[in-house]
Length: 81
Image (cartoon, rainbow, N blue to C red):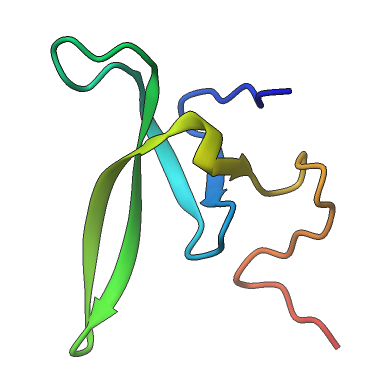
Protein backbone atom coordinates (compact mmCIF):
# COMPACT_ATOMS: atom_id res chain seq x y z
CA UNK A 1 0.00 0.00 0.00
CA UNK A 2 1.35 3.45 -0.90
CA UNK A 3 1.85 5.86 1.97
CA UNK A 4 -0.01 9.16 1.93
CA UNK A 5 2.16 12.24 2.32
CA UNK A 6 1.18 15.81 3.05
CA UNK A 7 3.04 19.07 2.72
CA UNK A 8 5.38 19.52 5.67
CA UNK A 9 5.58 15.80 6.48
CA UNK A 10 8.95 14.39 7.45
CA UNK A 11 10.14 11.60 5.15
CA UNK A 12 13.27 9.58 4.45
CA UNK A 13 14.40 7.50 1.49
CA UNK A 14 13.57 3.86 2.14
CA UNK A 15 17.24 3.10 1.53
CA UNK A 16 18.27 5.56 4.27
CA UNK A 17 19.66 9.06 4.34
CA UNK A 18 18.69 12.32 6.03
CA UNK A 19 15.22 13.19 7.19
CA UNK A 20 13.59 15.52 4.66
CA UNK A 21 10.56 17.82 4.53
CA UNK A 22 7.89 17.41 1.84
CA UNK A 23 7.64 20.69 -0.10
CA UNK A 24 5.48 19.65 -3.06
CA UNK A 25 3.65 16.60 -4.37
CA UNK A 26 2.84 16.26 -8.05
CA UNK A 27 4.31 15.90 -11.50
CA UNK A 28 7.51 17.90 -11.81
CA UNK A 29 8.04 17.46 -15.57
CA UNK A 30 5.68 18.00 -18.48
CA UNK A 31 4.45 14.64 -19.71
CA UNK A 32 5.20 12.83 -16.46
CA UNK A 33 2.74 10.01 -15.83
CA UNK A 34 3.18 9.64 -12.07
CA UNK A 35 3.36 11.82 -8.99
CA UNK A 36 6.63 12.58 -7.26
CA UNK A 37 7.56 14.36 -4.07
CA UNK A 38 9.85 17.40 -3.83
CA UNK A 39 11.86 17.24 -0.60
CA UNK A 40 14.27 19.57 1.13
CA UNK A 41 16.90 18.92 3.81
CA UNK A 42 20.06 20.45 5.19
CA UNK A 43 23.65 19.26 4.79
CA UNK A 44 26.76 20.63 6.45
CA UNK A 45 29.59 21.36 4.03
CA UNK A 46 32.84 22.83 5.37
CA UNK A 47 31.06 24.01 8.51
CA UNK A 48 28.26 25.74 6.60
CA UNK A 49 24.67 24.44 6.54
CA UNK A 50 23.30 24.24 3.02
CA UNK A 51 19.70 23.62 2.00
CA UNK A 52 19.30 20.86 -0.58
CA UNK A 53 16.21 20.02 -2.61
CA UNK A 54 15.36 17.11 -4.93
CA UNK A 55 12.44 15.24 -6.52
CA UNK A 56 11.87 11.58 -5.59
CA UNK A 57 9.37 9.00 -6.77
CA UNK A 58 6.65 8.43 -4.16
CA UNK A 59 7.45 4.73 -3.80
CA UNK A 60 11.06 5.52 -2.76
CA UNK A 61 10.24 7.49 0.41
CA UNK A 62 8.63 6.63 3.74
CA UNK A 63 7.13 8.82 6.42
CA UNK A 64 9.22 9.23 9.60
CA UNK A 65 8.61 10.99 12.89
CA UNK A 66 6.17 10.68 15.78
CA UNK A 67 3.30 9.31 13.64
CA UNK A 68 5.32 6.95 11.46
CA UNK A 69 4.87 3.19 11.66
CA UNK A 70 8.60 2.76 12.26
CA UNK A 71 7.91 4.02 15.75
CA UNK A 72 10.93 5.57 17.44
CA UNK A 73 11.27 9.34 17.27
CA UNK A 74 13.55 11.71 19.13
CA UNK A 75 13.91 15.39 18.34
CA UNK A 76 17.47 16.67 17.93
CA UNK A 77 17.26 18.32 21.36
CA UNK A 78 16.13 15.14 23.12
CA UNK A 79 18.69 13.43 25.30
CA UNK A 80 18.64 9.65 25.15
CA UNK A 81 20.44 7.68 27.77
